[in-house]
Figure 1 (tube, helix red, strand yellow):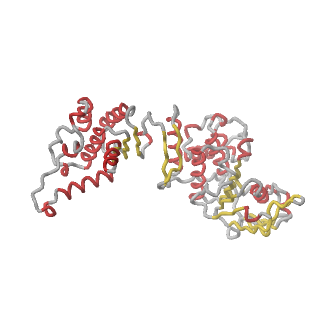
Figure 2 (tube, one colour; figure 1 turned 90 degrees about the horizontal axis):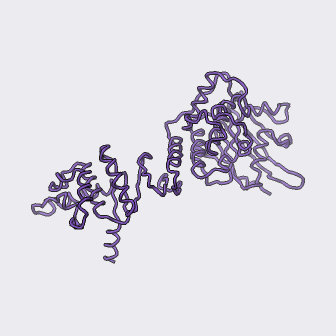
Figure 3 (cartoon, helix red, strand yellow; figure 1 turned 45 degrees about the vertical axis):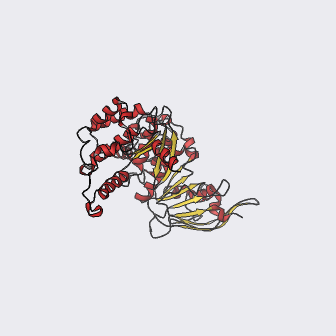
Length: 427
């Protein structure tokens, strides 16, 4: 067992803040005269560097380069405990390199180094990467090395996404940067335009939607029944259920696109359905985005024009927007880290970025309710995370009530607290 542990130690090296603090504390305890009741012999930097390593076994060129990068020659004879925090970290990095392990785990290895030392150390790691497997734990995307072969994104101690890197590292890092931007807690939504905005119900103390004993039936087939549901202002909901469970039917009752809305007891936005109101009186309160709508948005105008089209409820832009509307649409693109794609034709954007732009289009008038029907359909993992982050931002920062519909209850959005499962209303 001891031999196996020794072999593992030889094959593995790691450097982290926790390890650095533990080593500093261990040296302090070792040298504490009050505990040992003797005059302690200070542990030198050289002792730490070569405790279990034969310096003569190192290639002189490697040793000299590491000494030079970290300016170690002048430190070798000094007591380790008198070093600064930055100097102790350099010693640990040098020790890990001299160990020449098969696997090296480095937590923020460039922290505390000047720009020249960072560049030289990065170059050395690139040379060693042909013989050592590196695992870098990094906060800054700019520090991800170009020889990276796997990228893993952590969130609250769990892997939220991972991918294999081929020749697309720059694209992957750009997507991760966009995701991290959307996840910022300091973002605020653009304001509404004073000339083109969605109305609010006259009495905002009433429920936005109240469905009593809701039922949709086609012939002998009952899609769902006995559904009692009340949506209060700014009470966000996630609606889940498999295909055929009635999610879309339920949405169409709310939007008025299912004629059975007139045989159901529905109160919404101050109107009792079937009391003489028009479908457009209902729709003016609602922003809407679905996978089907996305696939049908085939006009190839710019990303900026797609967002602006939301002011006119059109597919494509056929009116002249005001300067205020243009400024606000640009703010929406900036919010999503897409400002550099403002003039890019919509059809040339990635599918995930198109989806973000269409959600912004649905939001520009700040509707009373935003319905997102399967917003993650057709998206790969990283783009799914971007869309979920945007939805969470809208729920957290906006005054619009969100109705988020999807297949998977596990695609949870932290700021959406209420859940409706359509499986509870199947026959």
